[in-house]
Amino acid sequence: MHGLGILMHDNAWHPQILWYLMRNDTNSLKTIMRMQAEVGAERRMVRLANEIFPYGNLLRSGNISD
Picture 1: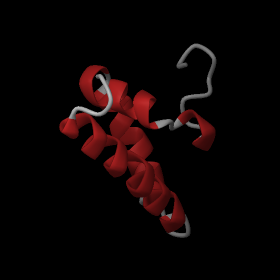
Picture 2: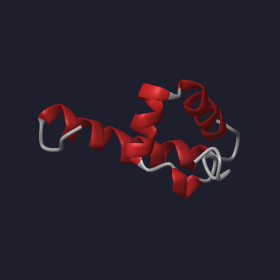
Picture 3: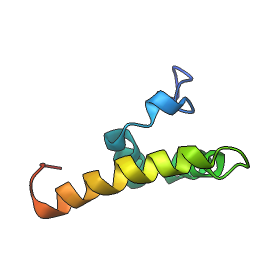
Picture 4: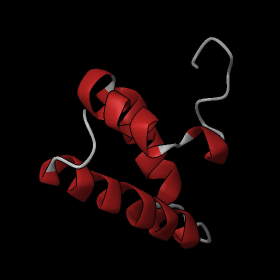
């Protein structure tokens, strides 16, 4: 995704991609999180929280394989 230049697009932030970045490319994930915290972009952080945390709960419960 870096090579395609689309990692910073909102639609690239699928929960599985973010989980991958959390495990393999924390620098890119930090950049994404900084973008989410920008003034006026608060809705983005809410979107990530709503999409990521439920997915994480499913992983922990064993309903989705990692």
